[in-house]
Image 1 (spheres, rainbow, N blue to C red):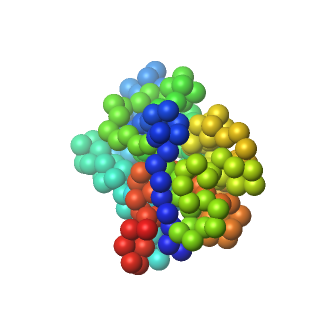
Image 2 (image 1 turned 90 degrees about the vertical axis):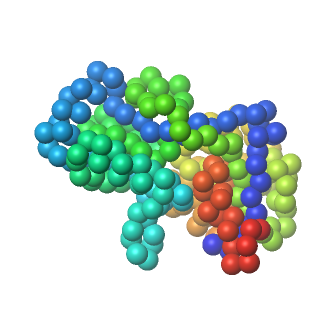
Length: 214
């Protein structure tokens, strides 16, 4: 991606904080799932492989990297089970778990009321504000106050916490919900959005440029 500029949205959103954590199947199913993992020797972990710093698959090496890759490996070791990764997304997360396509989801899943009604969560181990990412030389978006303006296209990944947060925040800019196989980064690079919303992990990864931080 071209050099980017990142800025934190906490003041603009009144201190809203995105809590990041892992999510499990509903409590009623936790026992049978654990029994199956232990008997089969494999834990199936749903991940979103485009998540910088969390569960990211490098496009060249195809290797997975990030905090939840490390933590899922530790989980497998604790359970004395191998780890099998299953591609998922925030949009399909609940369906993937309920359809038994994976045993646990580990890609920094935010705890929202809708998810809490259907999923069982661990204790939070990460938290982040919402960050805006735009290209370094963008002619219109240079500060947070430039975002909610007529004509500005604001991208969010479908199913993320940022989607309802920005729906409630934006009054003048237009919200663009990005769905796979499209990505926020590619949409920004192609000029189809002016800025996208993300968390600290992705912001930090995007913020690094060949000449340092933007």
